[in-house]
Amino acid sequence: MTQLASSPPVDQGVFRSLARVLPYAKAELPRLGFGTLVGLLASAFALAIPLTLEALVDGPLQTGNTTLIWGSAGLIALLGLLEALFVYLRRVTVLTPGTRIDAKMRNAIYQHVQDLPVAFHDSWQSGQLLSRAQTDISLVRRWMSFGLVMLVSNSITIILGVVILFTWSPLLATVFIVASLPMLIFGSRFRTRFSGLARITQDQWGDVATSVEESVHGIRILKSFGRGQDALGRFTTRASRGRDLEIDKGSTLATLTFWLGWVPDFALASCLALGVWLASAGSLSTGELFAFFATAAVLAGPIASISFLLALTFEARSGLDRIFEVMDATNPILDVAESSAPERGRGELVFEDVHFRHEDTEADRPDLINGISLHIKPGETMALVGVTGSGKTTVTALPARLYDVTGGRILLDGVDIATIPLNALRTRIAMAFEDATLFSARVKDNVMLGRHDVSDLESPEAHAILTEALEVAEAGFVYDLPEGVDTIIGEQGLSLSGGQRQRLALARAIAADPEVLVLDDPLSALDVQTEARVESALRKVLATTTALVVAHRPSTVMLADRVALLHEGRIAAVGTHSELLESSAAYRSVISSLADTDQAPREDRAVTDSTIELEIIESTGLDDDARLIRRDDEDAR
Image 1 (cartoon, rainbow, N blue to C red):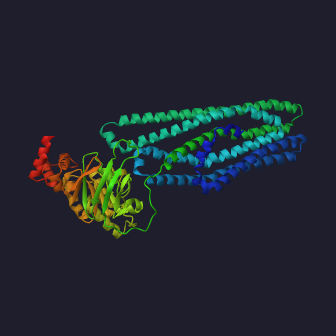
Image 2 (cartoon, rainbow, N blue to C red):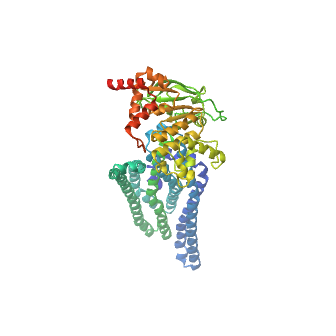
Image 3 (cartoon, one colour):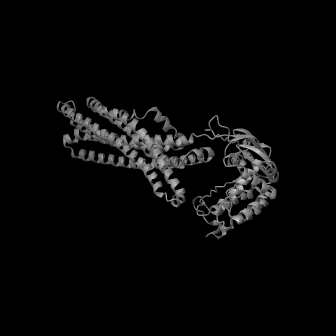
């Protein structure tokens, strides 16, 4: 019966999808197989009860032998007890392997997501990733622990039960099967509709998770602009869509459940009428007729469970498809075999005709980075300036291979970075971003994140590194936190101000003690006085470290030994600040725009406009002639 009802829905595509869980389940298959065997034994004890009943009705009840009657009753009670015991053992047996498979898959998807490049995360919603790593893997666990075991054992039980029915009356068994054939049609229709609904629903709940995640992370924006109700409206729309899809799934499942409940009952009614006629004609004994319907009653449970088990199977199939959409994503940034830890180099960084474009960039559009050649000497600080959209941030992401170049190459101490193991490369290059991201952990955990060689953060060595990094980054405010450097920072560090987060991110990059320090305007949220102190301390670090600094303000430019002007993905000019002021009108224009931008109020900045102008002139090093040139440029514009 199960074969008739479930074979059409379980097509080869479903088998292929579900089989992809085998690498994670291989070690657990023996225990799952044992659980299935225990479930079959429970069914066998249940099917043995009708056989005992047949012997009881045709034997002791006919002869009136009370001893055999009580013996048969005791045997039936024992078989029922054994059935219950083996059902309990089945559930206990399959619980552990299911949770182990769950853990393996969660670890695997998390590791794979961590390994995937930044470009992947740029194009995927975090809520969709979260729903796959949580909800979908939970569905697979339920299917492995319960759905698969029950589907196999119930299918075999129904097949054995039908065989037993044939031993009593081939005619009745044939009528029972033929009367149940409509289940084949409804099972096929269920497969088509429910599979599609399961996938759409799971995708929709991923969108709902994205809404929650975005609202939580953007709660300050929503509150400050009074847009909480708008966010609620968008969330309600998505959640309502999910609710409607769940209702559609429930209705579809209810329809199948109706037919799986009514059709077998119709088959039994047909068999009952025919069975009574056969018994009255002497073709079937009373005991056989009684046992036939007792066996059919035993099969009623497995038959009724088919709808639920099929639904769980198709949901698990959709979940696995969604999981492997992530697991099948490849990382174009190829790593090389780990080698012995490289000795600390000089930190010479060279860009040789470097090109970069995103995979989805239209063919007729120029590369985002279009042939950069730049030589940063060991211990030199190179500032990178340019208008918005010129590619500065993209350039800073290339040395650590957050993105891979699509043309040319980058050399670190004369070695192509593509030939350096990623872990080794990223211990030699540290980054601090303008948008500082901190983790929900202690201050010291955040700052010491890049020191792979220091395992004990309570050691004097770790304390010295931490203290120095915090001092350079002017992050002494951490000592005023409730538990000092052991204070746990809230999620993404949002309990701190923007300037405090930037200083901790800068301290993290400094504590890593890299050969090359890449800074993407990490001081943008600081007030003038704090910025000046940080820059003064940072000069000592930069004196012995190769640095590539994206500058969005003139004061940051003054940290550099040389400046590279980036224009439309190309290096337009390279030289010292003074040299470029004299030789490059484009550079003067960019510096002028940076100076104008720098006049905008910054965090905790309570100074007058005249003071700002004076600080800009001093920080840029513009003398009277240079200021006249800038004024001429402004007049020309």
